Image 1: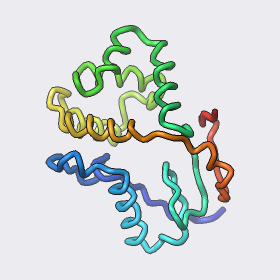
Image 2: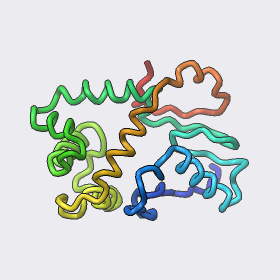
Image 3: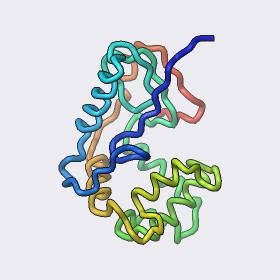
Length: 182
């Protein structure tokens, strides 16, 4: 058995991390999150040798852990649409509304999560804290309505796939049994 230090890190505006509610939508870029990760690694002086449970593969990474990962965002979206077909119309409609109707969206999202994400009830306090940061403690005081919509649209606009690059991964890689490979 080895001893490996673990850093549990909430990305900017997630969980117990700093929430920047008043910042303009232009702030929320992929580079922002990469720079935050680099700062964290440098702070702990581990930038040249670390293991990361993430969707990133930065320089210095020694091991890669893939959990529920898809090789393309378009496939993730398609998979979610297929999963939604199992639900009643009100859940499908609520998920389709996204943050245009945050109350319906949150109700639908919770039902979707029961089956396809975090099925622990009640939610762990850390998970509920994250939802409260987005939807507000009473769900009617949405914190990030326009911002979340902007971030989601930025992420959805990322096209492409990593399929051709998978053969270039030269790291010890752990893949859980829920990873969906095309």
